[in-house]
Length: 372
Figure 1 (tube, rainbow, N blue to C red):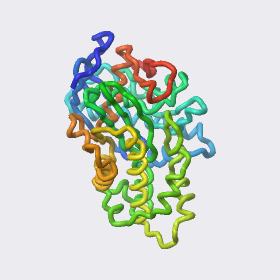
Figure 2 (figure 1 turned 90 degrees about the horizontal axis):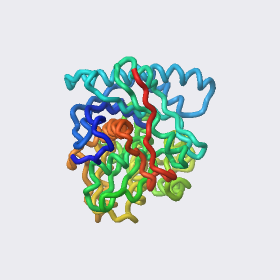
Figure 3 (figure 1 turned 180 degrees about the vertical axis):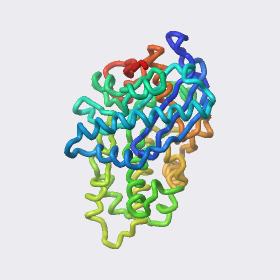
Figure 4 (figure 1 turned 45 degrees about the vertical axis):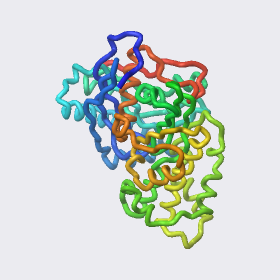
């Protein structure tokens, strides 16, 4: 696939991208060729040990002794990132010495752009030392320092891959959902539309001890609760003007429980799951409909939820809805690939943010470089 011409060519080569999103289901490790073309070489889904996953989730909400606990998790997660990197390189039979850099998003435990910061953990120093590869991380805070949201950061990569598509929306449905809308090769709009999988995942974990609702089957067995849906959609976030971004700080189990307190006692768990799926579909389609995209490319874990994709197709009836697999990049690996590409952009001296999306005053080269 074509990529923007870098200011220099010596940054072209192999990059690893690491992404552990809001859902915390696994670490996505992607080996990408970046430069005049973008090519997916290899990909690997690396498990997060359950005790570490629970420690991360607990850090996502304010509590006591956070600094000490975050420090321990920061180092432990750095080691898991290193394990994921070495695993994807072994799978591809590629030597670490041939990789230019690792783009590591880290794990967000606070995203507070209105307070001027976003905090990701997962030690880049541990990752660089363990692998012997330079690491680019801390992608968000330069944009925030320039008055932006620091999110979403994937639109520049979406433009690199699919900017040639006419009136195209790329929708990433991870823990949260965000979109990029492009017209005539340029990004026109994009923001976090609201929760993606996070509430559905939490609800099925609570009732069936499953990490996610396979194909949306459990949601499909229930009925949407209109009053509950209306209550959730009344959250002020959905009517806030862009640029905007969100995360577990807002949309979490406590938020859901507040709305459930007003739900009918006759509501079945599967009905609530159906309503949470409808919340995700409605918040995405409400964001996209005014833009009248001719095409919507869906990526992220939500792309595998067939019930969710069906609802999006129904709600975006004038738009061709398809997963990104059909447009050259498997849906599961788009975000990991984006951070490999952002590492390439950092070494190439190219901006990684889109000001029309984040609201930053200027474009900026994003990411801090850690050497082994």
